[in-house]
Length: 77
Length: 130
Image (cartoon, rainbow over all chains, first blue to last red; front, side, top):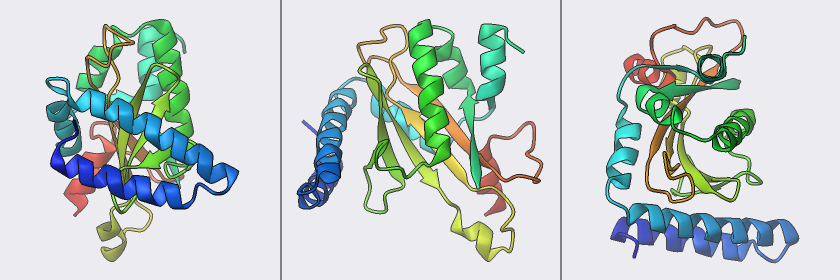
């Protein structure tokens, strides 16, 4: 079950998507939104996910550009 | 405005354990996010303002990311400075299919002609500028 704040967010986004679902693009968006919210609900139910997400938003420090990470892990120039 | 993906240390540690398939999928997804973080064909909104969003990572998981356009930058007359996109992820680490780990990323905006500090993630730069 989603936490209260997340539940409110989901209902708001669901209603928005549902209102736009009469055209094909809106219907695809609604389906995508429902899939993603299902996965989000599952993730939020796992220990550590909410804390890690919060940490991401508040920031933790250093790192590198993706291009550099690719070179590091793949050994490509 | 263009964007470049920036990976935080915690993300880099977890990326070392990602299978090649997962790594490739992540790279492709981040590339598309950087093209347009608000693309409705790619991501869906989480928050009312649409800045916190989620995107599917193939059939294996998803990422959530926050777009911080840093309106204060414009107010401070630093319009040429990059905005920032921060990405928090529900990616699994060792268990790619299980959503059991989190990968923490950030995607830093990059404005052509504006040098980007080599040591600071984009979002940290944005916070300092505020």
